[in-house]
Length: 224
Image 1: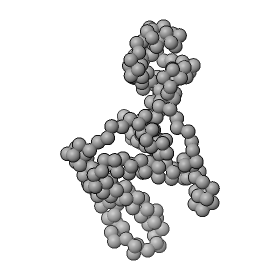
Image 2: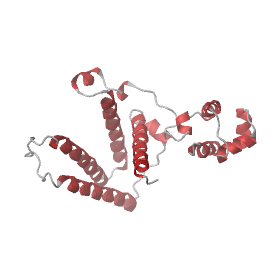
Image 3: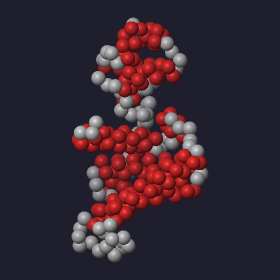
């Protein structure tokens, strides 16, 4: 049984200020059955899942807790690689889609940083992201032992640990700056979809993929 569905339909009903009696009547079911759905006592069928999704104007994936995006964003040309990219950059379609996903999400992050307007915060976030890319690039570059290391100033035996430590410090700086300076923005999936039309779908996909990856690692390690 999906554990998110009861919580989400209850939240949507209360968000709209509707009673169980009203929603049940609109959907053509008994109030008792809706109450069972909201408490997780009974599991609904596919037909009702689609029906209540249409009722609250949200996707089935949102109702099941598979995405934070209430409605699927339309795929535009900006979300997919163009023909020039496909011709000049090696890699399969997954490579190209993930590239766009990361680029669009990074744009959203820096747009949010621009709205916050704190230089030290922007610097710390930039350092963190650049360190992550530096570490990945160097791993790929150093995979061939014959490749010269002269372009790097940090020893190849130390860079992984040093870079990871630097990234952890950057996270501490970011957390400290946000807590001490009360640097925050009022955000929700809906406002993000409105103000970041181009990057919103990429951001939501990144959240979904990242959390699935984390959960799969936890399950594989038997930590859940």
